[in-house]
Length: 184
Image (cartoon, rainbow, N blue to C red; front, side, top):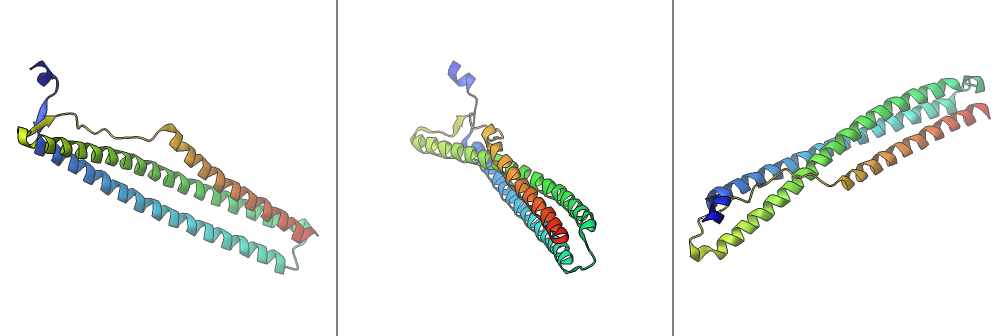
């Protein structure tokens, strides 16, 4: 009797309904976060396309201009520097948003997995107790919001490093090519 007092019971149908609701909610949230990540990735690609179109225009203007000389090389360098700075800020904001959405999606996936496992356990327990009148189960099916381990954040740091390494190389190439085109 003392063991029964420490483990309150709830009707099996209530437990199953609660777990199904949790599963449905986290499944929908996972899909919602996936769609939001995809939308942000499209936005990021649009930034990249516009940026490289702009770089191409600046580069072709330098090649075709007969008036620009070495003493004017500061003009395209300043223009490229401003464009890169604006682009860096845009990419940083978009990556921050993407990484936040991916983190939330991972949390929902982990919680969904735990809830699904608990539902499976309850169904297995209830099917093994069918002949014993198991209409109530112990209230140990509570599902807490799950978060990934700290090592999960390493994935985001690598993504940032790759994007900004690429952007710095692009900046270096564009500045050096501007100097070479105008001065040599």
